[in-house]
Image 1 (cartoon, rainbow, N blue to C red):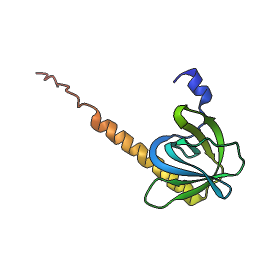
Image 2 (image 1 turned 90 degrees about the vertical axis):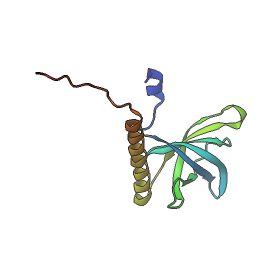
Image 3 (image 1 turned 135 degrees about the vertical axis):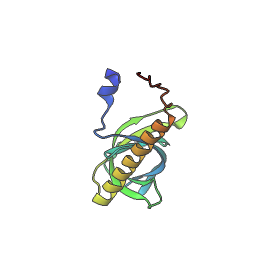
Image 4 (image 1 turned 90 degrees about the horizontal axis):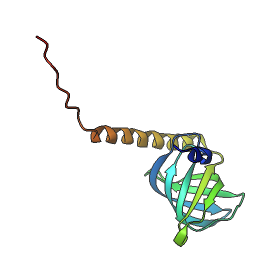
Length: 134
């Protein structure tokens, strides 16, 4: 990891790549629909949605699994204006109910387990030969 990457990294927990949809709310109106890029215990990265203003009252609805949507208050921590409307927005979860926190943690652990399993399956088997000693 480069020094610049270390300087810009703000997450304090492991992040996973996810496929999901997030609705960003500002007060009582939808500020945008985004594709989720990654998720950690402390926040997530949203992509391919509209630009958003710095506002103090944002919340997010995440749809990541079949257990229903999760509603969380969030704070915008970074924004990047991309080309052709491909904006990236980093959000930090402000407060979490214990059940929502448990769901996010379970999902992160599940993705990590799948990642390890797929790497083990992809690794070629060793072709070590045992030398017989007379």
